[in-house]
Amino acid sequence: MEYSLSGCLKRIMGISVQEGIEMRRPIVEIDPGKSPAPVKTKKIQNLTRVLQPAHTLRLRPDPEPVLSETTRPLPLAWYGTTDMGKIRRCNEDNFSVLAFADKALFVVADGMGGHDAGEVASKIAMNAVCRVVQEEHGQSSGLLSLVERAVQQANNEVRQEATRKGSNMGTTLCVALVADDAAFIANVGDSRAYWIEDGSFSQVTTDHSLVAKLVNAGKLTKEEARTHPKANLLFRTIGTDENVAVDTFRVALKKGGTLLLCTDGLWGEVADDDIRKVCATALDVKAMGNRLVELANEQGGKDNITAVAVKVL
Image (cartoon, rainbow, N blue to C red; front, side, top):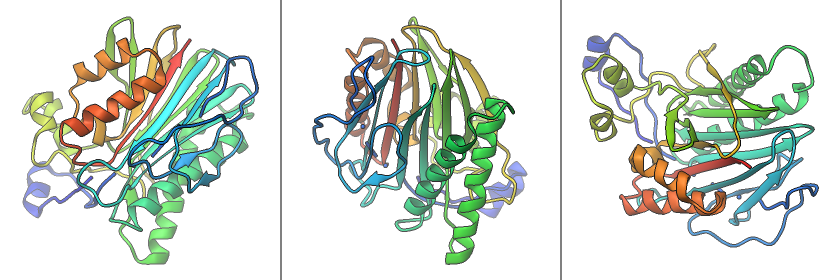
């Protein structure tokens, strides 16, 4: 993901926009009713990292996908995948899936700042969110508050590392904590969460980008925004400000619906209706995730591509 905003745009729009760069990751398979355990996996082209199945935050340097399933509190099947795309030389995306107690956590992050900066930022943010949620999920302060605190901690840790390195690293972040019959979602930047149900398709999160502001102001259509030369300019990211504003959402989950988290390497290449069709017709979440990545690459694959699909069974 590349960002560059001139002083002219700053004066015109009256907003502060950070500069940054690109996008990345992978997958776990567990039979319903059984305890989470990794099974035989297949390689997927251009994956750069894989999250091990439930009950771990550790990433292996193994470019294999992982497919996971859980039966509590709602029966869920999920699949996460990442791909470097056709243009980038490195993958700055990171994602994680984590199951614990009666909850499941899904995180997607798209790093900015170049190789060994954006990749580091997205990994730090991802791990911080996983750690905070895992440590505090049993408290009674509310799950929306929990995901917001986790994102704030991610912001603190990315800023600390940026200061230590003298870097302008940053990352987007999209988090979904599933508990009971709802998803508690938080986001900063333009990594998105979608909810697909009975043929309907809705974007849950709001992009913190220049073109999103122009769309809201009626100056651009959504389709024009996707291809706008300034489409990658963000005014809010993890690691930029001491206290980042975090958007939070609660989505009621229903049987047959799909929650999709993704970076702009997917939604920037693939039209909303095409994403909806894949999510509505795919035989399973693995086929869904792989087809979405294929479509993004078929449309040019100009950025790293990451998708985490969560199906309510």
